[in-house]
Length: 82
Image (cartoon, rainbow, N blue to C red; front, side):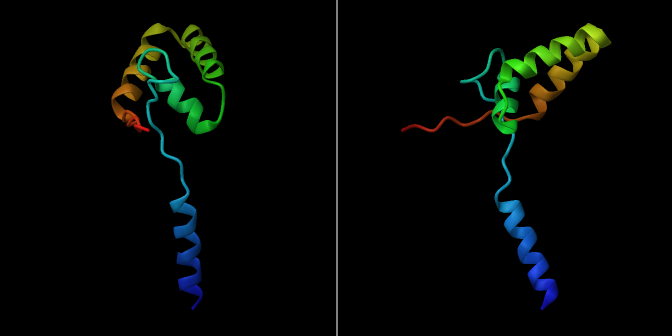
């Protein structure tokens, strides 16, 4: 009986997980920071400024590689027609 209760608890946790998408509507460029801001419930401009600071600290090339990697890794958000 206890195993069933534990499984049920975990299925409830996983059904309410948010998914990360690139959000072109609230984003600039490919929508990575717009989608990340929506997922984290943070203003995307804060994430953009943090990324610019990270690029300045580490150099331009690692930041570009990271951005391109995330661009191809995170799927686009499908627009809902209402």
